[in-house]
Amino acid sequence: MNSTAETTSPADQINRLHAEAVKLAAASRQSLDAALMAAWHAGALLIAEKQRVRRKMGAGAWLIWLESNFRGTPRTAQRYMRLARSVADPGFVQGLSLRQAYERLGIATEPKRRGQAAPGRLAPHVSLATRLARTLRSPKVCALMTPEHKAAYQSDLRALYDRLRALFEN
Image (tube, rainbow, N blue to C red; front, side, top):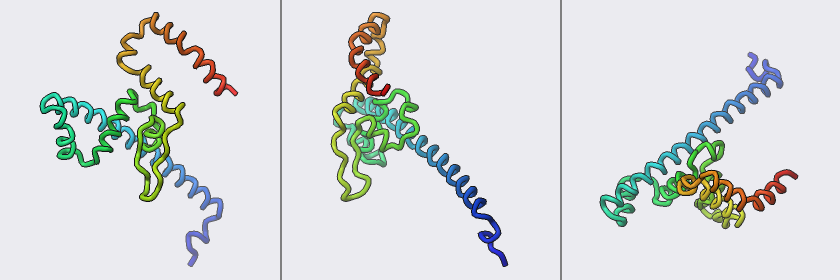
């Protein structure tokens, strides 16, 4: 009796495994994107619920509500809410894992495993870039974005743009 491995050539096995790797990588990417979208939507709902709870029951009631109703930790809820506040369009971080999105946005996370050191502070330029991007996307800034304000922002940020452009064009 011949086994399947004996009747298929190495090239057939390689191509089958390649096809499997491509299929699994696509499924993995879809799962990462779905997890990120779920966290972002949970964060948006948590933000709305926090406002409702604080308005109806006072500021001290939020943690009580959270412990009674949210199956994750308060820290996870905070991260979800920061994700929703930091990114107006979750497509901005699409293709990243939750951990990668948190890191890119400057949202602290716990170590993956016990005993693993928590990541150090983000480099100052990453924190500043995140704050600048968040500020420029804020509803207050967007509401002021008349042609005159846009020209003022462009004028104020021109030197920074020129320095950053030089870094990316090399």
